[in-house]
Image 1 (tube, rainbow, N blue to C red):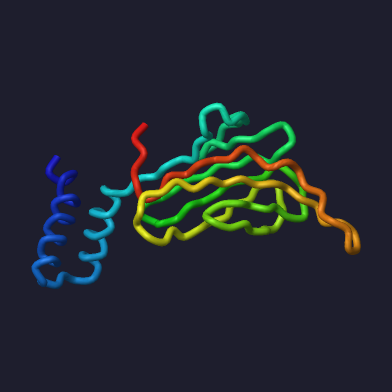
Image 2: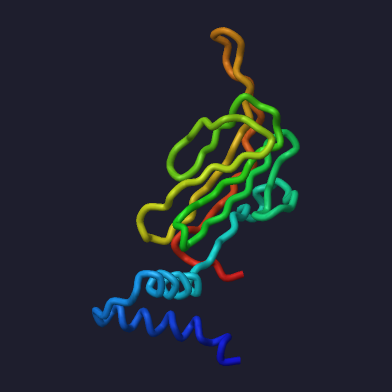
Length: 161
């Protein structure tokens, strides 16, 4: 039983010694820091606004779609400081993603993931939506699906479910 408690004790001891200015061997410090950090990590899953429509088609993170839209799911990882948006379901030349304060055009494909690094530490919720598009020939306009349901993702604050 004592062996099961040793890593946490080592992490606490390493944090205390490091804070006191006592340097530990690099490997021990890195291991202890990672163990202490992982205890404070959490993930938030994207959700739909109540009554917004769309259906959950499953997966992790949960993915949502309309009949004529790509699916979309999102996850925030506090320790990595990233938001990942999962989308797809169409053989398209590209997708348009709206979220995190901008719109991005990304390559097409049946299963895609786009990652954003989170800057700042203020708790905030971001909306994400996506549409699949095929480029027009010559100077023609792209033809696109309707936008997916809007998925909201909370960052910098743990969501308790």
